Image (cartoon, rainbow, N blue to C red; front, side):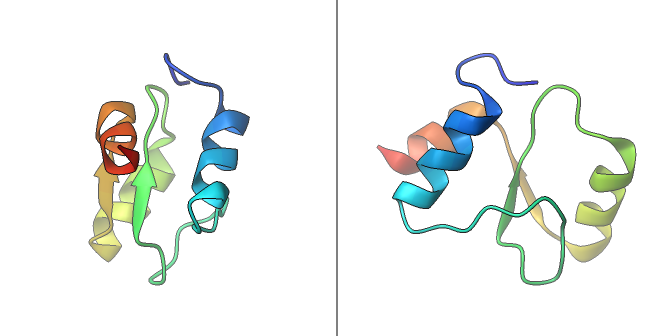
Length: 64
């Protein structure tokens, strides 16, 4: 769950800035935009692959 924007709004922002949104994590994933209720399996997979987790504020700062 996100506080500032909906999941769909974040997906749109990612795509508008040339990114690709994916529902699964792989070694090709650049970073994970993590909400408050990120599932433990996704967290575990991201950590095992060394994928950076960012929060809403970090993401919005990237776009500024």
